[in-house]
Image: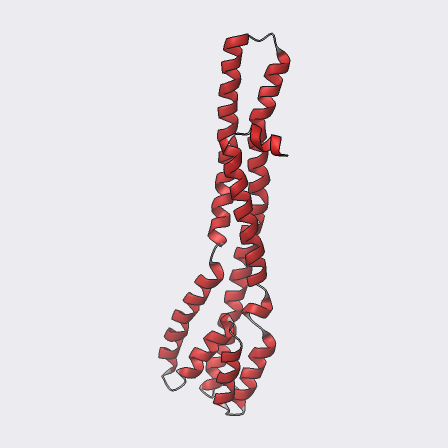
Length: 202
């Protein structure tokens, strides 16, 4: 394995660093984008039940105890329950944008890794092929084993680039769609909660 990396030269080390960074982000986002961390339905129901019972202090206590995206938004709604509906919506939209940025963090880096890894692999291959042609100019085309070994080494970086890019792209698309689904669900809960606070829905 070390020999495989060493044969690819500097480009292979860059791809190795990109793969470590990509895997770190994948594990971190998989942990941070769990439903229990973003929208714990049990806590949302407890907050709504407290509001229905006109126990705003209890609702705010539950929000503070559960530091999740949904509870932070509901806490803002409770803290501004006396303002007009239109103003509350604006406040929640601003809070929602901040929460979306929090959910989206690091995901863009996965997209960059997925985009540049094949290009880095191709760059390594081109550099390797240049070295092969330099060998041809020195020893001629008679030594097939030397040429085959050089070409094989040159192609290593392309294989490594694709190996890094494919899981990064899959993870990038998956986390993007997961965040989008959470955003839609958060908006639905927020609208429902505003209607409850304003007495428009039980």
